Length: 187
Image (cartoon, rainbow, N blue to C red; front, side):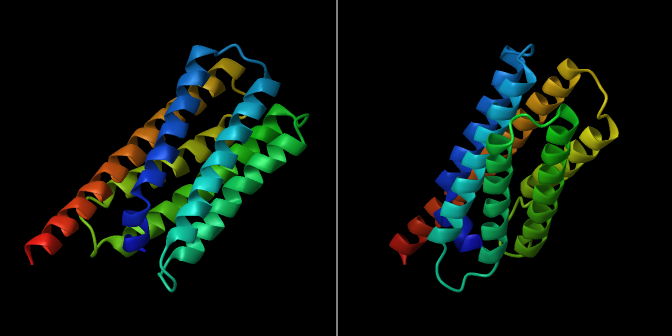
């Protein structure tokens, strides 16, 4: 699993950049309509799912945890497609999809971090991003009738924090790859 993550560190960068861009757009245009928010979330979830599936596909055959990455990627693609095919869903339904996606994603990220504890340092970044996802999902469920502006800000803040944590993890993995390459050259 760690090897798959190290080999796909740049995919984490893409996921992180997508998350940060999504969050920034939510803050820049807080008055966007529910329809635009649906499409924006759908694009983000779909891109995130595709990048995750691509990372799973790049993993060496038999790598432990690849199935989790595939499941996580399929979940993102499904969340994106549901929002595109059913754009007329109510705000509460959209929030339920977002909340469920965030909670399940967070649980998987925490599980992966715990599994990688002995193989990498600073796994806490993945644990924090997973916990942030779960917390975000719970908050969305707890406040479904909150004003649209506060929900947009909550979604934007979550996306930016999540993206920054993914970028941090990607840079740490890139450092591990560079360190391994340097050690190989010296040997």
